[in-house]
Image (cartoon, rainbow, N blue to C red):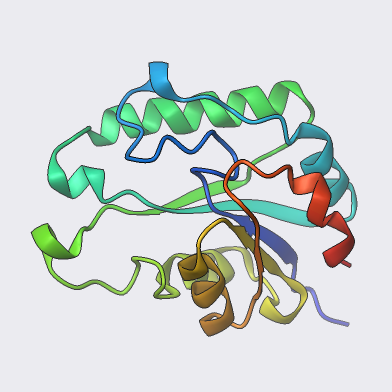
Length: 163
């Protein structure tokens, strides 16, 4: 019997918090979407919930690791109040114009591969919900089923696509 876990990876902007059209640079502009019940349902089905997000604004110097940490802490605490545990956050701090190439910026699969390795996840039983084609591409390359939603679309509308 396999002791591998299953997970739903989640993009951040446009999936867990409101898409701003540009980088969310400070915690005051961070508006969390109400996907509490949908994610609770997935958690109750045995999925780990992991966030995978490109944060190129770090490389551009638009915000700091400290500010990013505050946003992720707020996200984790807000979901926790609704009985949902966001297990971990994986983010790419690079931007091709500033730091050159990396293996973690989506559409590359690096962020997902980090999560798969750290939590002993079976990619074939896992999903990646994102609002960009690059999210689905990263998922596919990592062996995870990608689910494309519109920015700020309720996750409840795609629960039927997840076993």
